[in-house]
Image 1 (spheres, rainbow, N blue to C red):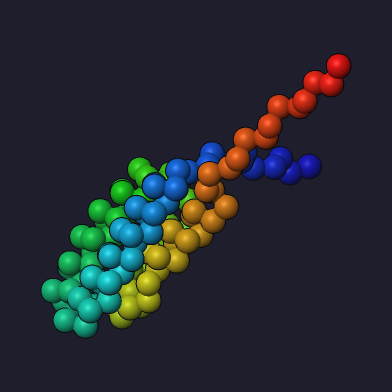
Image 2 (tube, helix red, strand yellow):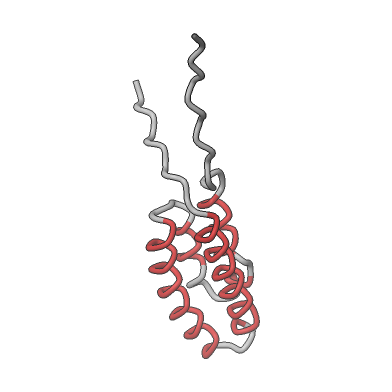
Length: 107
């Protein structure tokens, strides 16, 4: 019998929006920077290291961050917005959850 994974805690709406904004900004910087050649690749490598630390601290560990981090090191493969995709996968279904109302007591 395989144990079910532990449910991940919900994230605040602000944290999700900031993570999306950062991912979109980093992908918007990296795509044109890749076209500049080796200088852009070095810039992209530094951004990837910072992005990995920031996303882990904001959203916690998620498997989608590992392929995003590794594929960014392959020249011209990082032209795709992998960080935006990874944040989308990591935040899917983790928004605020309404707490259930207590049961009504009928006399």
